[in-house]
Length: 286
Image 1 (cartoon, one colour):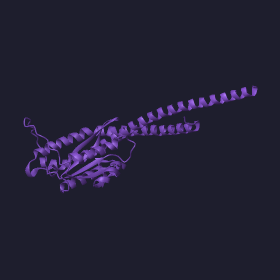
Image 2: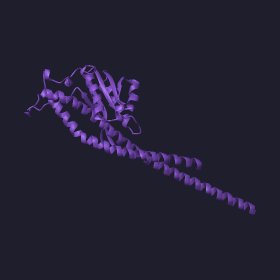
Image 3: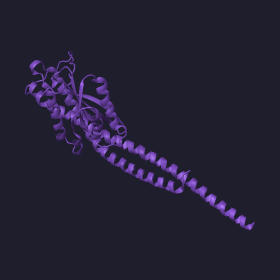
Image 4: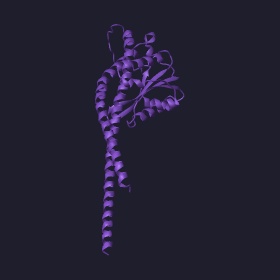
């Protein structure tokens, strides 16, 4: 059994750790509330805009089709991997790394796969074995639509100039504080939708359908990327809050166990001292 001084030191250390993890949990909970409200309010708009653009793009044919809808033979793929700049968030970052590995080992095996990373943690791992053409960690320093739009414009340019035949985004989709789903979405080309021939919609477009599509597609793509990063941002805080909650519970359990061991050791030490005193008194009497 460890001596009393060592046990006291361990109890102090564990208690300090417990205070830190508890504080981090509260900070993440406060940030999660704001991030969750932002992504919850944004999802319906982003999803409806994407649906509208997919339907309009599918209705355009021939020369009227958008450059962002061009379907090519897939030889070069760009994967946008979104994680975080910090750790202590459980499996949040490692799940993205696993999702990325699944893509280049199975889904796009034999293709040329390159990466754009958003988040220091995923960049540190992916850059060791694969080509990372850009690292956009700084977007988390000021997560605004304008900053994300600049990244989306670069991705759109890479697709339209033929650098890549497909661009996909991998991120953690926020479900709740304890649950995030690794999600892979096709960013470009725009995913065509199958039209229902039994449904006839007669719209009057002003200006023309082609002009509306060309103006709204860039905005839709920027919104789609912004939603993915916002989803990941909320997921990060949820994962960190959950991880810190579990760490605090584990630290509390360990501290209580150490205190029990300390009390037992102290009791045994006191008992030994009493026995030594009694034994010494008896020896003097004899």
